[in-house]
Length: 422
Image (cartoon, rainbow, N blue to C red; front, side, top):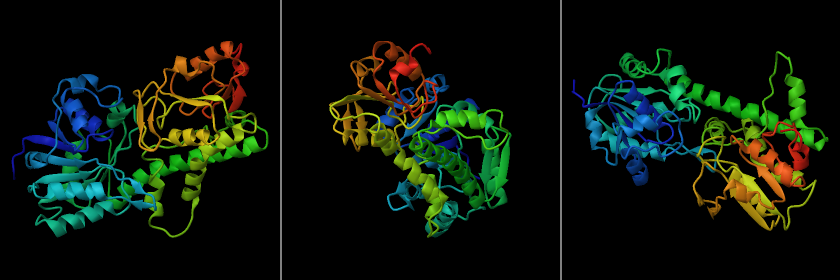
């Protein structure tokens, strides 16, 4: 049995991989990373967090977790954890190129006695594909010389530090040695380990995300119906949920992100017919257009100054991946406003968006000067205070608040509705 210098190597040190590597170090293991992003490597190796994730600033400042560009270090590590992206192509097809590239780069450095742990969200049967790939491209036998497991992450961005230690860890394996090694690795973080096979572990992760996606779609569908009938969805939800022990209805919103917006497709890829998952996707994707078109029933956008508050995919994060805010921005532009001002205090200035180009990120106090209408695209903390303050100065400003950040149970209203309520 080989002797290894490091306990863990994280391949892909983004929002999933970096918190995991730092948590392993805090738990007493030695860990390194591999990533092809030069700027990301430099930031991490200099002891700085490259994105917002509370709880890790002191850990990363120790510089105990170092990230490398090349794969030679794989020879020195006991456990290899793959956390690279698995996006969905435009044609509802899982894109495995990043995983395949990692396997190709790793294969020449593999040593008997290592564990390969896939942690990225993947389509069903991906782990079995990896097992076949190893058999086809190497002389190592899975379950005897090289171990293989699928151990999905189920954290929420912004809560990784707590949830890596509090959420149960699913461990999908199909041989005793792999199960033993995966157990030894993850039990340093949590004793709540649940064991199953590859396919079930993959479906557990997808089921968690798809269930939330469909649940949110139901709320968005109800919001469409309510506004068409002249009712307010938030009043409906408040009354429907009050002291009612069944069928809790969640609030509507722009539902995106790199998991929720794509994971439905990893199951849909395997079936030829339409289903509720595709319907949920269509509802979510329609919501930016709904906000604009139903706002136009109240007033116009043409030649008006519009502010968009928030540009990330969820509250209190700096992650723009698969956000629906850029889509909302494009629909607003189609109505020929005088100006559109984007403001998101979690993002740098300028905001670099591959689809919308380089956008000015306005300080919020300047974004709201003489503004005619405001779209709250993300429910970042503090937006309620800003809007209540605005109401005192510009009561005629229109507000589109899908998130109900001001808690007045309306999506479309003028700022005067907030006067006297703060």
